[in-house]
Image (cartoon, rainbow, N blue to C red):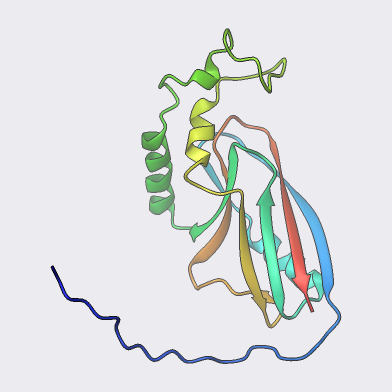
Length: 169
């Protein structure tokens, strides 16, 4: 058995804001037209503009996809990486695999007239997320140098709705 001890780490705290202020809440929606899947749409500049227009200096911005087959994630916008990420999603849940969700002869819940076989997209979404929350500091989303906010289409082309909510002072 290995004998392990917790490492001694020096953590430095720095107050970013310490005063009472009236909270501001802003919510806007973005409509993103997708053309395929998996497909990565960089919506960072829209998020930055919404935060700037909100007037919030310190707080949070939450970016939310109101779809179960379109995700929101933060990652790097580098073309080869995006190809790697798309390939990984296809490997996790291939579109040509069998999914009970696609068996319209058996499925009786949440059916539409134009229902398509998209079990793979739901399974891919399981490994992603519907939202990201980012701190707002000095009136800007506090994202890293290479971090970008993506809407990720996992299903077929259509218009997707993204809600952006800024809360702070």
